Image 1 (cartoon, rainbow, N blue to C red):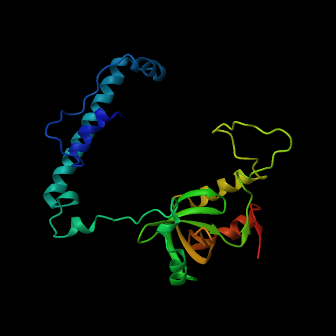
Image 2 (image 1 turned 180 degrees about the vertical axis):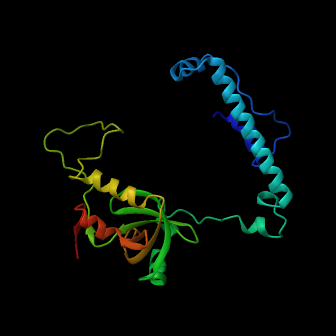
Image 3 (image 1 turned 30 degrees about the vertical axis):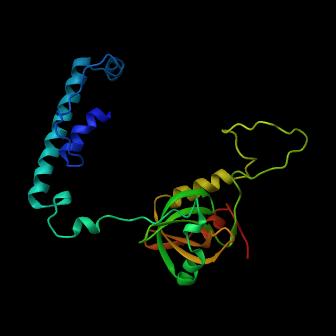
Length: 236
């Protein structure tokens, strides 16, 4: 859906408030022809069906907007101070500039205690970037007690020295099963709630600790899962 089609819907739900906006309408275009022939319907039927669906969407959104406005929900809430408390002020990122994070202070205050977080990015199979709750501090955490294969390990050139390096080329040769190990961590942790148990801090202000996550009614340790699935080696 293009922005021109999405704009009236945003107005209907109260997300934006322009002075004047026309209802969403689809204009006929020759680009609809291949799709119509592919699904076995006429062009007029496809266009008519799409227009009717959009009309139903607009009606439902208008009905929903009137109900929320009448009951004082969402942006129409009437409780004093609710709108102000819903604004979240995020701390500065600690990934690009480690000076924005007091890693030693965070370690001394929470060492050995589980900290709630949400995994935002998996850099490799044993390095994740997490939003710590409730402050939403964005930090990088290295999983302790394991040595995992590197996705982009640097290798020393033997004879030929290339003067130009293309941006899309990998940085060195990956270790065996490095991509499979990263995929395992991606599927296990990405955008999921986790618990971080801090163990230490390196010289770059990166946090080192255990990463635990819920799996049904049990709690699993990422390091143990990587070792059990032969994606990492245990180190003391």
